[in-house]
Structures are given as structure tokens and as C-alpha cells.
Image (tube, rainbow, N blue to C red; front, side, top):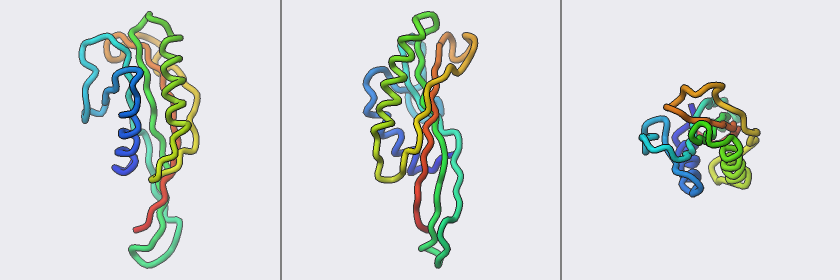
Length: 138
């Protein structure tokens, strides 16, 4: 899982998103609730660390590499094109982002998360993977 530095930076970026409501599927922010209005979220899928520089403790270089997933949901049967339009805008938000704490490597195209209508009630969900790395010293 991604470090708290990365998670905090990504959630701060998500705070800039105003096209839809933003929910947290990891239960630290607003839940999906019962309203059927489009929403966006992020999930932190993978984070690994490796030592990239030998030195004394406190000066050793480390690299965290990982991925987080952007999610965009619209009520089922309201149109995949609406969901894709929102997702394209959300992906663009992260493509132009140059955070100080990490480097965004790739923002992958969107793909459907599910093939049926059984997730979180009645949602059509697209996801897009964002790959990053973060160098730090300890």
C-alpha cells in the first residue's frame, strides 16, 4: 500500500475535483451513501520500497514505487459516455499534476471495472491506473 505521504498528496489533489462528489471507499471520508449522483474516488493498490543508495543510516536513499486507481461512477444505464467524459477529465487532472513529493509516471486509459451491475448498488464504474515513484532518505 502507498505511504501516508503519497496518500495525503493524492487526496489533496482529489480535493480539487469539482465535477462530481468525491467519496472514499477506504472509509476515511464520506461514504457513497444512498444518493444516485455520479462520484469519483481513489484506491491505493500497491506500494513497494527499495534501497537505491547506500550510506549511513539517515542518509540512505529509498524509492517507493506504486500505483493508485482512479474510479469514476455513474448510475447504471445513465450512459457510459457520461462516465467516460468525467473519467477523461479526472485523468487530465492527474496528467498535469507535478507534485513536490513524488513523480507521476503514467496515467493509463480507463477501463470498465465490472461487467455487471452488482457493485455498490447500481453503478457503472470506470477505473484508470496511475503509476508513481517517490524518492526519500532515511
